[in-house]
Amino acid sequence: MKYRRVSVDRLLEQPSGRNRLVMIPFALIAAITAVDVQEPSDVHLGPLLVIAPALTAAVAGPWLTALAGGVAVVAQVFIGVFHGGLGTANHVSQIIGLAVLSTLVVLVSLARERRNRQLSRARTVAETAQQVLLRPPPRRIGPLRVAWLYLTAEDESRIGGDLFATARAAHPSTRVIIGDVRGSGLASIGEASVVLGAFREAAHRQATLPGLVETLEDSICRNLEEVADTEYDPGEHFITALVLDLPDEGTGAEIINCGHPPPLLVRGRKVTPLYPRSAAPPLGLCDLPAATPRADPFAFEPGDLLVLYTDGVVEARSPDGDFYPLAERIASFPPGSPDALVRRVHHDLLAHTGGRQADDTALLIIERGRSHPVDGRPQPLRTAAPPPADTTPGG
Image 1 (cartoon, one colour):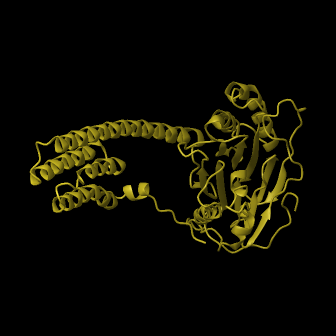
Image 2 (cartoon, rainbow, N blue to C red; image 1 turned 60 degrees about the vertical axis):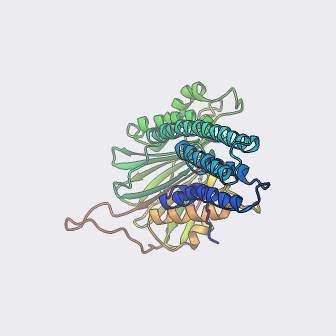
């Protein structure tokens, strides 16, 4: 099933489409005037001319709206002259009424344009804030290739409660986090910022993954209360998360699952959920007794893909109420790069939900390539699937 949405807004984004729509009000003025002058003098179609500025205001700015109103008034004057009754009370009242209504429409259009400029500035600020908070990972990190998708539940927002980040560690390796703040939208941004800030500060300082998670928990517990929206959301505040360590050398990797949906390991056509052997509680549950988290090892070989996601993906519902079957859908897609897989999941997810986004959604796909060039030339990523290894958490 293909998903396609056609809207006036999308048509307005194209200059040719906008020009076609703007011509409609002026064509209506010409048509109404032509019909009116053909009718008997006791039939008055002139009041219908107010449709032109009203329609122009819906598809254009205040200046074109004023032009359409002016042309409509001129057309009304022409109709009055043609019927020989320009000085009659009927035609005078029609002209004055049309001029007043056109002026009101122009004022409404001016107010809307001012609001649109304010909204545009707010969107720009939100996009800048997203860049600062999320700092989208580079497409290549060491031997890894990365692609990502981020969608928010609130239409006017570009950031929400889902988060992900990457950082380089000293051994050398790449540290990765993906998380989901309880709740969604703008109210959860502060909590997401605390997690991301703590991760970026500690990722290169902590030698072990359990040490990194302990540092995250300590930082979150010290700062979460200051940013949590307790006035409108007095319940518990916590963050589910996956924290990974992906060394540059070898195929060994580690993961700690803090109450988050399990990632998927894609090896050829085989998709394996990495269930934790020893799950840790979500971050931010500061009242629980402190316990050292345990890292689960797994094999991450050249050509493998890791699919990290938040529950906004797998809990996305179709119009019939069915959840999105991420693992099944990925298994059905042809092998490809992380970018290609992100695009396929994105389009398929929109088709599944009918374009409705009920929750914040984050998707991060990582592919391991070769760590060293041969003969001075970088080697391509492997696409053939190596034999499956039973070294995944819970495997």
